Amino acid sequence: MKKYLLALVTGTAIASGGYYIAQTNSNSTPLPQLDYVPADTLFLWSQLNSFPYLQYFELLPKSYKNVHQIEDVIATMKSDDMSVNQHFILNILEQYSKSAESSERIQRTWGVNNDLKALAYTVGLLPVLRAELGEPEVFSSTIKQAAEDANLRYEDTQIDGTPVTRYFFEEGGQRIFDLLVTINENWVTVTIDTPFNDTDDLKTALGLTKPENTLSSSGKVEKYIQDHQLDGNNLAFLDTGLFVDMLTAKNPDSPATQMLDKLISLSNSDGALESIRTPECQQDFSDITQKWPAIISGTQKMDITSQFADLKVSTVIASSDTKILNALQNMRGFLPQHTQSNNDALITLGLGLNANQLSPSVNTLWAAFASAQFDCAPLNTLQVQTKGANPAPLAMATGMLGSFKGVSATIFDIDVTTLYQPNEFDTTALDALITVSADDVKALFNMAKSLVPELTSLTLPSDGSAIEINDYLPPSVSISGPVYLALKGQHLALYKGDMAEKAANDLNSQSVTINGLANFGLNSAKIFPKVFEAAKQSGEPIPDELKELFNQTGKMHVQYDINDKGIVFDVDMKITK
Image (tube, rainbow, N blue to C red; front, side, top):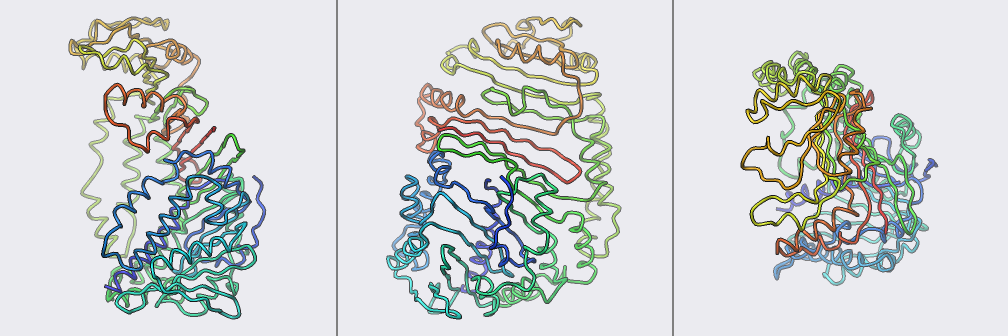
């Protein structure tokens, strides 16, 4: 049991670092603490410049702080037979849950001020969290109190003359690992000491010694910021090459590989990775990760005050595989202007897809893997399975779409009180727009008519004039108020409402150009009150976590795309108090 717990705890600690790869933050200043990060860290999350944490925290509703999820975990963990270790973790979670009530309590509980710098990384497999706090002794006191309340054994000791508090995680009198906390000036460092690391690893993790090769001298941080147009406030990455090399033991002398080998041995799982640790697999996997070297995330803009936050976070699955990227880029289609980030709709969704290129692109992706030369047995097995799934039939399915380039759906406004009528779906106060875009949208519409008998006699004016189509709807669909359909340039627009009509008319000036893959927009200031009203109308109880959202104002816009650097996922958020 001890060994399984050891693997679980370590894996969880490493994975927890990956969780922070989606945080926020202008102007890059080298953080001296990067001198203590090994160049071969598996991942990094870093707040390189000061972040106004307390201001940002006050802007967030309780539901955004994961408090309810943590409270659920707390309720699940509580039992009469909790171990000391579980009790300690429970105490930490309870402390966070209570402190999340206000920025003042955060400050009193964790010693955080409004000038936060922090970073998380690995030394081998040891997870390290370092943060510059206003009152680091407050953080230390909170951890000690949680241990005392749980009867978790700890001691204040020294390593190379540096004070360290060591918390002992044990089971059945046997050591699992130790949690270590040390303070150097205003920097708090948290790491673990395990059966699979040595003393030198621990000293590096505690920041007592610098690694021989540092991240700050590797040029990696500067390269990622420049390549992906990040602002340098916040940077995170997962090094897929180093991670795979660890699994395949391509470099058996690396700290990560050596620690993993010891961990596997302690877990009585010898041989678990034997199938991919052949010279052939080491080379094949290395060749793959050279073309897909990292997942990188960071802010492209950040503006935070006591009244609002304006943030854009970009995450990129970086790649230099031009064949794959070109195939993915060829699938991009058209996204109309009203689905972009400046839109004031309640909710909008756009999908850009070049139907003419879908089948060729999928075939290219399939052929790239099916025809690759692999000497690694597991990859060969997967390749054989892939060859049995030839995507050629996709050409028949997509051929019917012709010149299709994109589709979107947007709700600009709605009065939810009209939705609960006894005999019909009343859309009197619905303002919404659905669009279909194509190089030859009229031909696409005529093809659709042949598949829907109700539309056979429907003819749309070529001048863009709209016609009411309520009489063409299926008998089972009952909608109050006129619904219009029109050809707007290269777009087919189905709409109802004044704002939708304006957006539909604006399509006339928008040529169908390739500009994206998918996007999603949400205006919380407008939609959450609607959700609240709909819940009241339905008579359903409103969960506490939703109630916190109804006073929240802001916008979020998410965009998926492909560029020559990789697969891109951008989140643009505006939050106001």
